[in-house]
Image (cartoon, rainbow over all chains, first blue to last red; front, side, top):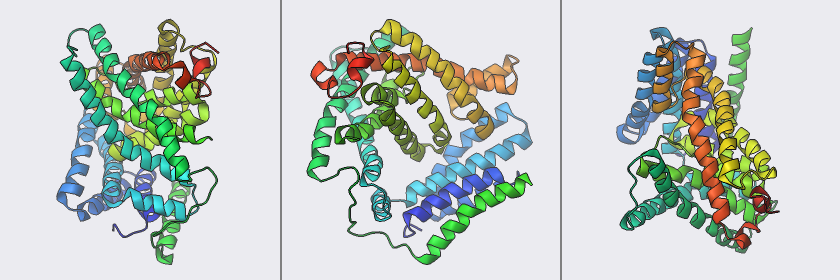
Amino acid sequence: MTRLHPFTLLTIAGALPALAWILPAPSGGLAMATLALGLTASRGLRPGLWPAVLTAAPFWLFLLLLHDVPTTIAIGLRITTMVASFVWLVAALEPARLVEAMVAAGWSASVAYLFAATLTAVPMLKARAQRIAEAQRCRGLSPRGGIASRLRALRALALPLVLSALHEVDERALALETRGLRPGIRRTTLAPPHDPVVERTARWVLLLACPAALIWRLL
Amino acid sequence: MSIRLLALIPVAAAISLALSAAVDAVALPLFLDTTGTILATALAGPAVGIATGVVTSAVNTLRNPTFWPFVVVQVIVALYAWGAARAGLFRSFRTAVPVGLALGVIAAVTSTPISYLVFGCTTTGGIALTTALGKALGLSPLGACFFGSFVSDFGDKAVTFALVTSVLHALPRRTAARFPWALRAIGVA
């Protein structure tokens, strides 16, 4: 499955939840949820099925709290399909391959950069937030007490994080310029992912199945 | 779009997602997940703000897929923040906090139909519990859903606006001047 073209993986992960919402409940949702959970199970129990089940389980609990049983089953199956599809996508899709595929398909390298750069920046900034919290605690900052003191503590933690991140913008811009990343310039990929005709056809079939199912439901 | 503004988008999106670590440290019921969108808009205008909101939602979706339908809220937040920046409403807490409170109402109104129709009001644990509280208070299902969204968004957006105002005022003027909207947002240009 990981060898599938990134666009095929994205199409499957998008089409399954869409069909779960469009097709009649609960049979449509059940079929799509079974397919999505089957896909996550194909990645193994620990990286695939368990995260999907653990993420979807609280939704079932809250649905039961708010709705009757038939509504809980109908909405729960749709949410389970959505969760399982994305858990499978995250496990199967390598960001680097997606960037290569986007650039090879003629997308601007800037768009590909936006997603790749955000994915790498989030863990870096989270680690920095942790270091700032530890440093502020050493200086006597207490994150406890009433709401006003907690808000003051939040400001003392968030402000250095945001300001330090903003100061990096110039460095990043310089790095991008030296690598020739200018808007509107086409780049050539070193190893574009293989995109066979069968997969391209399957993607179109899946994409057309969603509006077709919607028209069928509406008529 | 200039390279500097392009480089700002992933940084601002990452700020939105990384601030959860700071929120966890002080144990406040806040999300601050629109901080980057509002900050990017106040610094660089609506196009950069909307792009930041979309990237934030897309990356957040990889962590929790229920975030994706709420990308509409990020776009509305960016457009609203642009209006606030044009009017120079980031000039002080006195102007920014009421604007943030109003955004909380708008965000709740926008997110309620999405939460109700797509998720049956069960997006996150905290919101689902406040929705259940609204239901126990005798509100209609849609009313309870709005109650849940309102409780979570009202204070959150006010704190977010206050935080962005703090950042804009703490930025050295020379750094702020490199971004096209920053000085106007704080009412000095």
